[in-house]
Amino acid sequence: MKKIISIAAVGALLLTLAGCAGGSTSGDSASGPKPVDQLVVGFAQVGAESGWRTANTTNIQDSFKEAGIELKFSDAQQKQENQIKAIRSYIQQKVDVIAFSPVVETGWDAVLNEAKAANIPVVLTDRAVDSQDDSLYESFLGSDFVEEGKKAGQWVVDSYKDSTTPVNIIQLEGTTGAAPAIDRAEGFADAIGSDAKFKIVASQTGDFTRAGGKQVTEALLKSNPDVNLIYAHNDDMALGAIEAIEAAGKKPGVDIKIVSVDAVKDGMQALADGKINYIVECSPLLGQQLVDIVKQINDGKTPEKRIITEETTFDQAQAVTALPTRQY
Ligand code: AHR
Image (cartoon, helix red, strand yellow):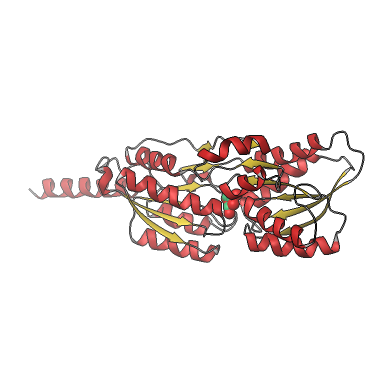
């Protein structure tokens, strides 16, 4: 009898150890998938800095509601420490999946290791982390920001191919340290290359906000009166720049050309009106794909590690055509 009890005890111990082993898992194979309406997902959003972000938040909340999955949502107000706090709270609450869009690229390993130790899978949406250990997240869903920067730069190269006069550029950068700010600068620089005609005379952050774009442009136009092109890392900063250019008595889109990224409705309207000259699309509609990834994880499947959003570009005529049915 004693022997039977000790065999049973060893068996139970082995089962427990097996349950605790490993890092982040794709589904809980011991208990099988949960019914979808019992899943709880924690989402740590960057903030509400731009029209893009607002559309992204709405789309994610709507998609989870439609799927019947509970979504716990937090807004980090563009502060990494707030996002880390939110992720730790989701770990404590033992949610099934954590998703987040990192404010900046660096400094995530500690909290992601905590999620891994708690066996909670993490999905990155929109922005990347620069961690060397890609086992810290299941999947990264979002745009190729380097490619977006290249498309903006290529438009500049094509637009000025017959011009011999210098193109003096102000770059309005996104949030310092954020993946889209780093990558869009890199892609743009790559595309304009070493042609001496193109000169980035000033490059400063406007934090992806309209107010930031306006303030920085106001100041930079004073110190660089010969600027003839603005490259804005998002539409909101381009819209702020338009206000600053008009206040300086110049015509946006004519005296100073503008190329930006996002293609939110307000940006597209400015493009249709001729105040912005070209927009590279960055889609915020990531909600349904995120729901699909959460379901795959719940089913014990391995989602694709990198899912790149499909995007296009718009000139003025294309903006006029697209505007009536634009979703965001
Ligand atoms: O990470 C995506 C970027 O963040 C968008 O281009 C910008 O508008 C937002 O704030």
